[in-house]
Length: 257
Image (tube, rainbow, N blue to C red):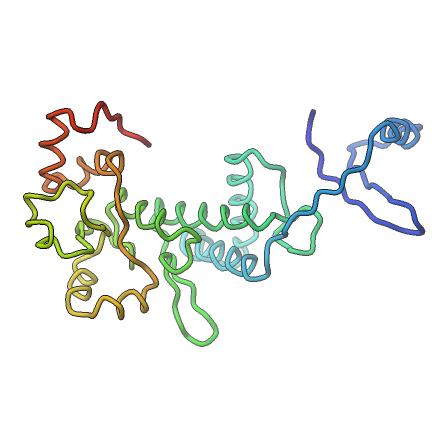
């Protein structure tokens, strides 16, 4: 049946259930109590979103508000719209962004909302830069809950995994000479990342441990499906994979979304 978000309260050894209705008619209280008496009670604990997640979500919404709507009084409108879009996409009820509210998001769904906001920002070129009180800036790479997934999203969008600039280079995170050079690259022997020219040059002029510590990110391993999906995006790369695919080594692959 239809899912209704209920608010409960315990008072004088009685559980009160607050049921939202458009119109209260005589006898509805008694009818509902009779129905509920036929059901057993099950407690389902959920791990509610944290204050840190709440602050991050509000900061990301503020990025949309500032960049797309000019901030100010439009912030509340932007928050409502983004919540509605997310709830419709994942088919969940309307929710609160307060960790103390009964209809708040659980911790996993809050992470999914953060992912959703960042991905939407990348789609609409919204700068994802969170400025902290100490003056430090955090970019999407340092915020997205699943780093490997984030790096792959940037590869597919061909944007820099550090600053999100477009037309990024395909960067072999590991030395390509270790596999015999570019002609021996099938995309499965080294890790990859997409980097703009500035950060690509920075990577080669910085010790890898220092680069990883500064940006909290690493290249990722690809599987045959990943490589196949990237062929059109990086037409001058993966030469060995193209040859092996024509020879039937990877079967019949179809492009994924």
